[in-house]
Image (tube, rainbow, N blue to C red; front, side):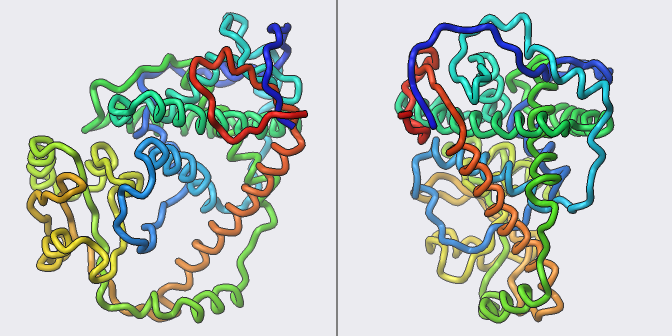
Length: 396
């Protein structure tokens, strides 16, 4: 049940994610798109998306970005092995049961089952996911409000899961937290990281890592613990989709697409100098929806616009195209390999992973929807700072 209203702030007794008791980690620097990608990729190798047509304008840019980011957060989880992880040290559990942040005087913007969530927590959530997407600066106010509304809905869902995890004494171990922060630090401070990324303080960054780890660990230990894929399911899927695995006229290609020709030429020179880093450049700079996968996509013949396919067709594996202009912007392509017929033995592991991701995602979606339907959620629209247009419905 979701309600919208204006209720005075009340004294809150909720969980603290900022404390570093039992963690002992030094504060670090930035937490943006690449850090999120690095953090999530430690749990899963994201498979190349299936062929689905070249249509970068099919949805508004702001919604495309948030759709990709939030869906990949869950997709990254789905390749977890299903072994049981210890619940974590008792000192961490105790540390997570105090007040969230005694110094947070920002307004309460939503109450979830009686627990108040403050504006600063949502801003931290928002910043952690989209801080260095330059497309934000190009959005009009309506798009920005839609983007924040969609992320606000995700914030509410995430916090519902966090509460459930803590009720069951599920907390990340010291090693899990340390590894996540170290991986993130390496990614954001490595070669090629943007100098103008938004900075988050160490405690803020730890707070988001802890919350995301809590969410992932809850799903793994409570929702996905009994999931498996049978050999019969794998064989059935292959038989139903055999044509897909027998096609010979497709190609796996990486793409960088940007709106400015000068930027495209600069990226082309970087790609020529270090072709193995093409995927990294695509993640960091491409405005195409495939950027989240390092620009990787499987296309069939005649699926791309002719001007783009003509640039790719003569390429050999590993070669780069020149900068190509189209109605969508300026493109650079790298051919990874051409699609070849593949038998059952070659693809059975890939099919198993795909079916596992699909089944896990379905279970997660079902749990999230059930939890939201059963929750008491009160939204204080006048404190959000944007025109809320999300999917959390009002009413008793």
